[in-house]
Length: 324
Ligand SMILES: [Zn+2]
Image 1 (cartoon, rainbow, N blue to C red):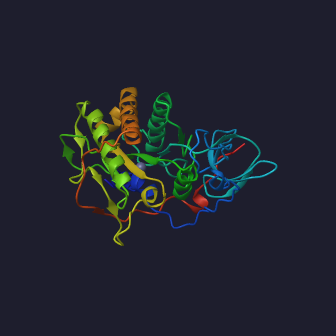
Image 2 (spheres, rainbow, N blue to C red):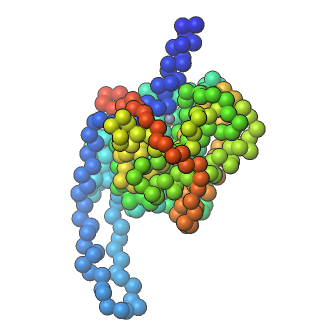
Image 3 (cartoon, rainbow, N blue to C red):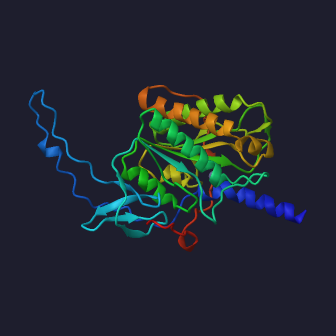
């Protein structure tokens, strides 16, 4: 019995852990010299378009594929914020300006695997796989996109949120797969957490829930769900948005718990290419619908859930990946 209990404890802590709020401070001060455009726009009625200026580098894909926020361009390279919230200088990379959509694959690295399925499927890998499929889908649709994490490394919540703000994203969507398993349900237990004070987050959440529920319901398996599953706010006992990826960014944000990786039947489904394609297509439809229509979704839960998550991975537990 004892080993079983131990495994259960690990699963319980796994998914919700890194979704929590961080207490450590991430440098968010941005120093660039770019705000000269507003005073030069002509106010007369002329057919001439306003002058355009080359866009500054707001983020950078380093030679090793890591996406980082650019703090400042220097004569020799770029001063950037690393995934663990440190400052570093990168000599070169592919620069990014404003970006419409930021996708956040939850968890990552050796310490923060997220939840682990009975089949060995790790949430961190699954979140990244769905995120990369969503990225490819959105690019085909002509939508700019970047991922907060592009491989298996740790990244702090404040850094992920700061990246979305830095590129002036229209929306941020954080992808997760849930644990621990609640009771059996005739339908998927998809949960979408929204910013309690944002109408835009609420609309995006409804679209995500509607599309994901429709896609997952096509799979005839034994689902699990919490009684209050749907589109909802999760508040701490202090009354503020509980999850770091919801409270942290100024950007319109939602966090999608697609369904339960801790349910062995669902984890088996998640390991298939059919699931990844269906999930990413559904998310892409929701994102495109949010950006291009005024549509509202469904699944709204009236009462907020009260929950105090564990702090995210920080301090010495966060190990930066190689940037060059
Ligand atoms: Zn998670």
